Amino acid sequence: MPSDTGTLVETLPPPPVGLGRPLALFLDLDGVLAPMAPTPDAVVADARRTAVLTRLDRVLDGRLAIVSGRTLTEIDRIADGASRSAAGVHGLERRRQDGEVDRSAPSPGVAEALAAFRDFAADRPGVLVEDKKISTGLHFRQSPASADDALVLAQDLAERTGLTLQPGHMVLELRTPGADKGGAVTAFMAEAPFAGAIPIMLGDDLTDEAGFRAAEAEGGFGVLVGPCRATAARYGLEGVPEVMDWLEAVADAETGR
Picture 1 (cartoon, rainbow, N blue to C red):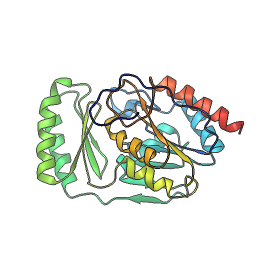
Picture 2 (cartoon, rainbow, N blue to C red; picture 1 turned 45 degrees about the horizontal axis):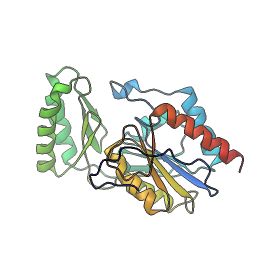
Picture 3 (cartoon, rainbow, N blue to C red; picture 1 turned 180 degrees about the vertical axis):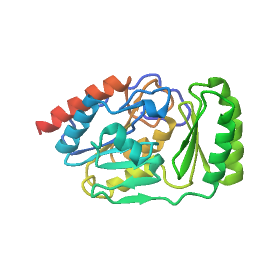
């Protein structure tokens, strides 16, 4: 059974492929569709990934969405435009199947956080700042010794500005309060072509737990990618290669339906 109460889940079975009902896939990007990289810009388009996503979008009749902490622009760059539906910045911006985009207005505190992050990074080689307009991220993958000081700064800024602190893999993000990945999944499931399908959310980070819970609430399930931990996901896959193999198997099964 899924658990997000703090009990360590040691093993998770792989997700099923053929469920006999229409599927809707919600896929995180970094750590799920693409391997983690030293810097955000180092993640680039991949021919196999683009081909698999393009095929899935076709055989699922558009019931495919990338749900990521990256912006929609970055999602399109890395996924090579293969997913028409997408949610970026943890659900703060969402593009529907028809191309219409819902985007939250930036909180005034984002500008203050961005300036503080840039000051922090100025004398710390390897620390990178990402400006997403409605949020800002502080990346310290190349400077792990900066982690503790970065957390103190981010927590102080969150308290002063009212921004939401979103920890990730060697990154701390301060974002405009509001939607999360779970809200994005729920919103997609209320619209065509997703409505009535079985939602499956694949994710690797704590930010994906809301997506796992939303999928479960809509009659589907979550799939945790990477090491096991306390999670709301029901199934697991080891890493990006296993995700790509599973997605190809889903495409094969759906083609034969």
